[in-house]
Structures are given as structure tokens and as C-alpha cells.
Length: 289
Image (cartoon, rainbow, N blue to C red; front, side, top):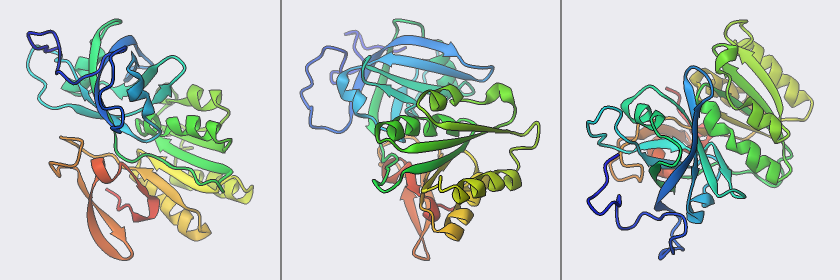
């Protein structure tokens, strides 16, 4: 990865043990140390970083902007936005789950134990839980499950019951099952290979949870068809919800407007920046893709 002659990325990035001169800031730039970077299946990897305590302020649904190393010696021009997978405050670690398919993530895949990794954040508005919610339904697919996974941590801290419906192409790429289950969530897996992931079947599952009183709120990410289903059921049963939107980003702080998307608020179409105004939004205001 590219370092300045001084051996630092910048003069402001904080390493573990550094005094934080701007402790009041919500976000910052940090140089984490790679604890592990291992494959979880044929497509996804899981990287764990030891970081400065300031970075541990991240919560479910927020993201970091990652300065990925080059996979081939050529410059990687832009940082890569990535949602937080887990915050382990006890061990001073932050985790990301990622799919290796572009130059940035291919560069990440080459990180070894002990390597430096520059991250900036936490950025954006994440998930929130209302005190009146006692049971929530989390429905995600593919890499969207990585974004939803921290909800299990947030819900466990607030003693909220979670039913997690994990949708995937096949059993080999179902992610986050152990994380959800380890924090007490009821986990249901639906797959393309046996057609249990069909919208009609997922709708039956969710309707059953509503009938059981296990659905005070909906949370989703990773699939337009599942977003539409949750919007429809939310309207039908007057159940609130939140969606984490996926979008190409450049600056990650709202300056470039590349991540603009259309939302429908009180019957009017409005444009919002996913990185700065989200990435988590009211599920009923999101317009699909």
C-alpha cells in the first residue's frame, strides 16, 4: 500500500495508543492493524482490525471508507465504502465482511496479519430501535446480510428479540448465520436451490411472524424484491421499517453527489445522498432499483 516518505498515510490518522486531539468529532481517520483476514466461503472474506478506541463508536448500519491497497501495483484512486459487520469493543476490534470482485476488494484480500489498513469513519446514519419494539424481523440477501448483521448486536444490547431470515443462492453462500444465532436470534434460511427464497414463501413466513406478534418492525438490505415485499406488508399491517440502501459512492461524505437516489416522501419525489443522508432510510420512502 502507498505510504508517504515519512511512513505515514497522513498526519491525522490515529494509530492505537495515539492521543486523540479531536475526541469530540464523530468521525476520524484511523490506521488499524490486521488481526485476521480469512475466507468464509468461495466468494466472501472477513477481515478483523485492531483500531483506535475512537473508531469503536461505530454502530449498526454505519460505514467506513477504506483505503484499499493495490492488488497489482497500479493506484487505487478512491476509497471503498463498506458497512460495519461487527464492533467488538471488549477487544478493541472492528470487522468487515466483503466480496472480492473489484480492484479495491481484491487488494483487501491481500492484507496479511499485522499489516496496516487505513479506514475513515464511522460515516452515515445507521439503524435505530424504538423502545417500544420488542421483536423485529430482519430480512436480507447476499452481501446485504453483512450490513444487517450488526443489528443482532444492537438488539441483544437492548433485549429486543430478532427473527433473521437469510436469503441466498445456495447454502454455501449463506452468511452471518452464526453471528445472528450466537446473539440469540431465531434464524431462518431460504434458498434459491429449493425455491424457499421465492417471494411467495417468504411472505408466508413473515405473515406467520406477524400473527405470532414477532414483528414490531422490519429491517432489510440487499434485494429489491424483498424491499418491495416488506414495504407492502408494512403498509398492510402498519408496521414501520428501515432499509439500508446500496449505492456506488465516491467521496463518502456527501460532497460529490454521486450516490444520489430518488425517494418518495409525502407523495413527492426527492433526491437524497445515500452516504450522508443514509445509508439507512425509512423503508416506505425508498424507491426500488
